[in-house]
Image 1: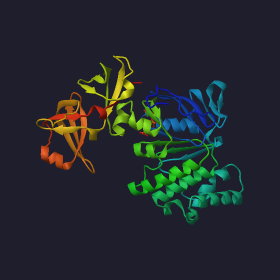
Image 2: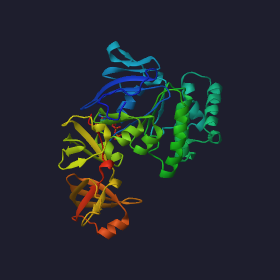
Image 3: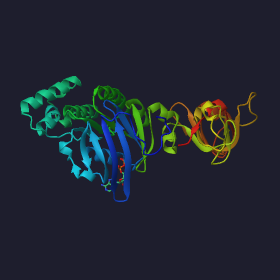
Image 4: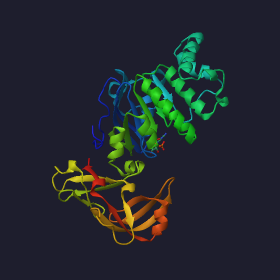
Length: 374
Ligand SMILES: Nc1ncnc2c1ncn2[C@@H]1O[C@H](COP(=O)(O)OP(=O)(O)OP(=O)(O)O)[C@@H](O)[C@H]1O
């Protein structure tokens, strides 16, 4: 599948894991998404606030009933309104991990992890033995006797994952699992989480705001916007060929839409044009709708004459903002087209860049990646 897959596309090839066609309404919001996740596959769901990510997880977990469609996991139907079928959450084999972990405060770590087996009717000793094995596997055995208020954020997150895995789920659903952690712990746990999810045999879905988390954790990314699938693809497809402004911004790219007006020449919808050296658009007919991305680091800013051997794309603009990032300065330029440009702090000083400043922008045609618009 390419990164430019159409809306409501199907995700993943296998049908043995999760196969869902989700239609749910919440007052004036409607989510419509077809989602397939293969066994052992990790799907990251990315999207802006209010896109419907949590609604999607809640529908899969049985915390919200479908209006239409179906949810099937490992061949078992969990929701199918047309057949009047709805399996309640407690009877769905789902391992849930929430942002705030939701550990039971009055239970020890061991009993938190043993909870699902107990709820299914296992005897206390049996449930605890199973829980102890999971804790050991995750390297958490030393925490077994503690209560949740005696855990750090990172430890609580690990215990929450242990509890989810100990329930022997058919599917694992994680809602912003690393959001409550500080940056350093997040990095550590992200790596561990990747390992544990890779070892899990069923489908997993991770909801996240963080593009890096999606890129690192997932085999496949699904982008939700306003209750619809905006894009699906492997992390590298989505990172290289975003199809919406939201994804382009997340990936730190300038995204332009326009029409092919000759070989390698794109007339942009918002004004201006770009030359591209992308081979794959050469076969497209003139007039075809295309998207083009240009990295902020591939654009240069100039005040006077351009250096010799000028690149193919040159245009003028006005600096509208200058923002210091950790290792570079991001300059917003208004023009035809608008662009975000990354320069060094030295360049900002040398060019005396500040809002209102007129600049010339240049970028090589080889840096402009174009592809058919979905
Ligand atoms: N209990 C509810 N009743 C009615 N509408 C709701 C309810 N919960 C959420 N919504 C609406 O459903 C839409 C999707 O919300 P949802 O929480 O799924 O988004 P999200 O992508 O998870 O957002 P965020 O990243 O902010 O958590 C929003 O428009 C929201 O206002």
